[in-house]
Length: 196
Ligand SMILES: [Zn+2]
Image (cartoon, rainbow, N blue to C red; front, side):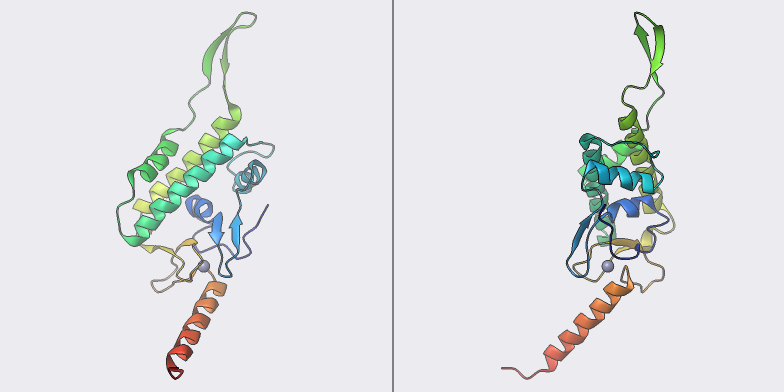
């Protein structure tokens, strides 16, 4: 599993939705990480966040559901930080996840066993449940008291989201802050150098 070589952005430990959003990121040095790069990685990520039991094995279908939710979540977070309306498709994706909490096992009839209750797609249901929890966290964060503190890291190309720990915090990590300061110092030096 590819681990993000940076400490988690502020708020990530408290918010599953930020953990998911930041599971793909372009880091300050331009490296690119995707913690959900394969069904195995996606399984490990869900297990690590206590969203599915150890021993669960995701199918590629489930991995794609999760990365699709992530993409839409990132779009909604981005529009929120920009103060613009989210697109309906992305909002719909989060709402589908919210509404897809697995229902009770259904009633089936088997010619040998008679009536019995069966969970049709156990792994799919586990993933639906995990996605519902992530979507619930997103809905709560985006409408809660910390909504105005959601920000994206200001140190391009880093694109991680965070909950600002104080009003002026602009970076997701020390490393991003240091990089941004170095860039500014370099820009100032360029400004002062005589025109050629
Ligand atoms: Zn950053």
